[in-house]
Structures are given as structure tokens and as C-alpha cells.
Length: 353
Image 1 (cartoon, rainbow, N blue to C red):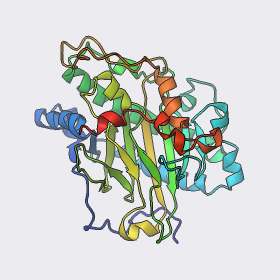
Image 2 (cartoon, one colour):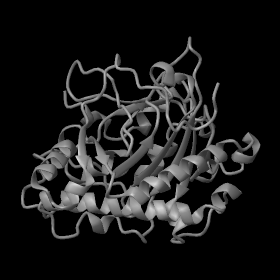
Image 3 (spheres, rainbow, N blue to C red):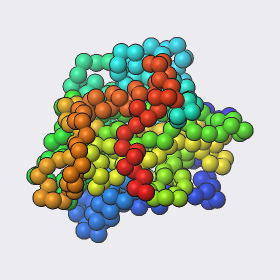
């Protein structure tokens, strides 16, 4: 089967159900187009996922993403023993390498079918001490820095729109996500090989994202979202050229007491002929700074709903929340299907049944 990255992938089949993601224009949002901003806010509340059209506004970002897809292919072509040198889970870190089958994907104990490599924002920007890494990453630090800087800038811009809508004091959300402050922000490279035709199943289990905002690039299908409400069915998200797929994470649910939405999603085998090819993905995960408490924000003049007398959850820092979620399903750390619920986040709020 082909192992190269496809610049022109097989067609995404018309016969599969696709998610109703809005297509938002970065250019219109940057010009403060009122209708586009309203659509953005609606997407953040209703589905928590949307397409962001970057063409004409972030062309250099798209070029960087294309270059990093090639880096990812070279990275994952290394021998397994070499990649395993950078598996840092036993040291209590979610950065570095995760091999295929290293994590459970459901309560039945089935294991995942993809490889990860997580690159720390703090490492690349020299906020923290450097982490060990293979030479293919060491020689592409400037490219990674460019991608991280643009990703973080886009996240900051989207946070500013949300901050205004939530009537929070100026800069509140942005100041929880400062570029040069320690956080769990990361670039993730992903490789998912073709699955057997007679055993195509979940490659990455149903979950919500751990942090604040996720920016995703992929060329092949496989990502699925579960819309809110009873009777909802899983829908594929069709990749669109020149667009990123953006979604909100647990932190935005916590900060707004459920007003904003972090949607449940998973990764399956790509549909149709796409399923015969290696699926590579590139992701930027934005997380709150390490010491930020994952709880409702004050000062919103009533825009963020109150607790309605409910007992507040135990306050957890962003760092501890992400560590629990990122390592909570690792087989090598003694986790199994019995521990599935312990590694969950805001999934119980996502369904809105």
C-alpha cells in the first residue's frame, strides 16, 4: 500500500454522512465582519467544531503545514527502536513519542491504531529546558517555531473574539494563554496506517480535547464527530483544502460553565478508497498556562451562566488536568479498559441530551 503523503488523495466518498460544520473565513473574522463573527460564536456554542478558511489570510501558515507533513513522514519512517527512545510517558510526560497500540480506546480495552509525536511549544520557544528529540525534529526547529507562533496567534485572536462576547475584562482569556508562559501547548504529528479491510475500527477513541482550542490539518477523512442530542449518529468530517478544522476543548467548557462546547469526536479508518492509504495529520493543541485553575471565570457581567446552587467541582490546575487525561489510558502505565472513565474530561457535558 502507498506510504507517501498524498498531495491529491483519493476522493472523499459522497455516500457517507458528514458533519454540518460551518465554513468560516479568517479574513472576514479579522475584519470584524458582524455576520461572520456571529456565525463563529454560534459554532463555538452549538457544535464546538468549524472549518477555518485560511486562503489569502494565512498562506504562509498553509505552506508551513505542508512542510511539516513532510517532516512527519520522515519522522515516522524512523526505526521503532529509535522512536521509542523519545517515549517519555514513564517520566510523567506526554511529550515525545507514543507508539501504535500504547493506549486503550474504549472501556472494552481495545488499543489505538496510530502513532503520535508531541512537540512541546515551551521546548521550541526555549521557555523550558530542551527535550531529547530525533535529528529530523532538531533540524526543523525554525519551521516548528514558525508554525507554533502562527498557531498561537490565531488562537489568541479567536480567544479575543470569545472574550468580548463573554463580557470578560479585556484580555482575560488571552492572559491565560500567554506565548512565553509554561503550558501544555504542543504540535502533534500523527500517522495512522491502513487498517485491514475486514477489521476497520476505531483508531482513536471517543473523547473531548483536553485544552482550549485545537487547530487540525489532515488530507484524508477519518475524523468523526457526534452531534449533541439523543439519537445522534457519528458523522465524518470531510477535509477541505486551504482550511483548518478548529474545535474547542475542555478548558473552554470549564471557563464558561458549559456555555461553550467541546464536542466528542473520534478517529476511524478513512472512508472509501481513502482507507487504503496512510493517514497523516498535523495538530496544534492550545492549553491554558500550567497553573491556571480549570473552573468558571468570574467577571462576565452575567454572560457566563452561574452554578445554580450546584456544588463546585474540585479545582484542578491545567497541568494536572492534561496529565491525567493525556496519560490516563496508557497501557504501559498499567491502564486498561477498567480505567477508561478515569481519563475522561467534559464528555458528560458534551452530549446535552
